[in-house]
Length: 377
Image (cartoon, rainbow, N blue to C red):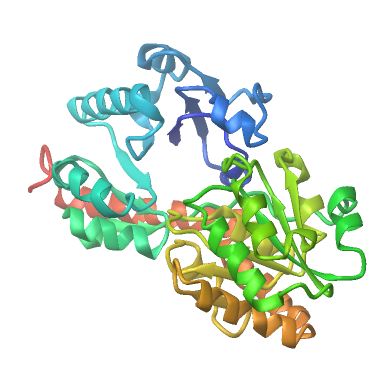
């Protein structure tokens, strides 16, 4: 029996939830903030349809009333994000679960880099001790998250990888008309996501200009909301590649497969990305992948030189070199793409659900043999 707490209905989680149900898990999911304006701007559905096991709640009390057997369930608690309300809500929730000695697990990406991480370190240390003392364990969104957990002080025997596993590529859709018309007979690098500094879009445009110049046999498709107030377009103009770059704009979550059909290589050059679900989506579509080493998913969904390349975060030269490989050897796209599908099979929603259930069983066994009242520090 599971109760997953998460800020808002999230199309990146839907397939995982469905896979848990298919495995016979008794599941409830509680959403405690609602879909934010920022996410709606990114193409998320404002008021998605909820199943009977999903609950849009305004308070912890409302959730416990909806899920009357909450004390008997294992609770998945996300990182203390979701804005200020989300942080306060989760702290209250964790306090309640600890007081009632209800089984719970932590589940999150790694923390933000730099000064933000350092300033948050005391909170992470405190939270790690809470997890060690009261929780069954901590699920990390990939290897980078587990490294973070070690720095927090969470016991390694109580940590495991449980990644995002969004809905796989759908082949029964038509290519996005705008993207397919723009690329014509050219090959295409594809980026999916917000166009912002954190995602390294300036790095991508510069690398594309360095690798391709103004050649017309490769184009760059940028699909997502542009938060640069036109700066990326001006950058492309200054570098002489504006005619080879499509600023597609926002598409809805349901149109992602249509965009994937238009690319030959998926690129994610982020300066920081806790996971990066677009790599799951690209791999499921059979695309080669290029991502920076600051992307959590790059350590799991990219096998360098077999289905793509992991490049140095923030480096134009490193990204341009990887892109040049496909420009010089376009036939490599098919070979690498086929391998991407094989890699993806290890991170499908079904495999993820299996990992979650097996790990929880092992933690419960460990807990039964070690706990007397509360866990030792």
